[in-house]
Image (tube, rainbow, N blue to C red; front, side, top):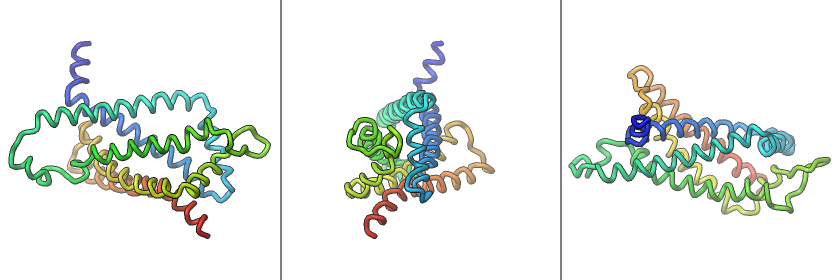
Length: 228
C-alpha cells in the first residue's frame, strides 16, 4: 500500500493522474457538446430541452456529476502540485532562460489557460446550472413541470451580451489548453511512437479547434438571431 501512495504522490504519479483526469474531462466535453448542438435542430428547442430534462433528472447523471466534480478537483489539484514541484526543481540554465527552446507556447502557458477556463466555468455554472435549478421565473415547458432550458440559454446570451462575448473568448483559451493537454496526456501514459504520435498531434489540434468552436457557436447563434 505504501508504494502505491508513494507512486501516486510522486511527480510521475501526479502526471499520470492529471493525464487520466484530463482525458476523462475531454470525454465529458464530447458528451456535453453533443447535447448542446441539439440547439441547432430548428425545433424551437424541443430536443435541447429533452436533453436538459434528462441531464437534470436521470439518476445515472447524478452519479456521473459526482465523478465529474472529483475529476475536476483532482485535475486542478495535481496541476497545482506539479506547478509547485516544477518551480522548486527547475534548473537555472541557459535553456530555462529561453523556454521557447524546449517547450511549446501551449505547454508554457497551460497553467494560465487552465486558470482562465476555471474562472469561466464558475460563471458558466452560475448562469446555467444554478439558474436552471433555483431561479423561479424561468417559464415551464408546455404541459410540463420542467423549466425551459432553451429559453434560459437564449435569454442569457441575448440579454447579457457581455457574457456571450466572454463565452466566445473563453472557448479560445479552452482551445489553447486542449492543444497542449490532448497530446501531453497520451505522452504521459506512454503512448509515444514515431508512427502514432504525429496522428495524435493532428487529432489533438483538430479536437482543440472543433470542440471549442462548437461551444462558441451557441452564443454566436443567439447573438445573430438577436440582430435579425
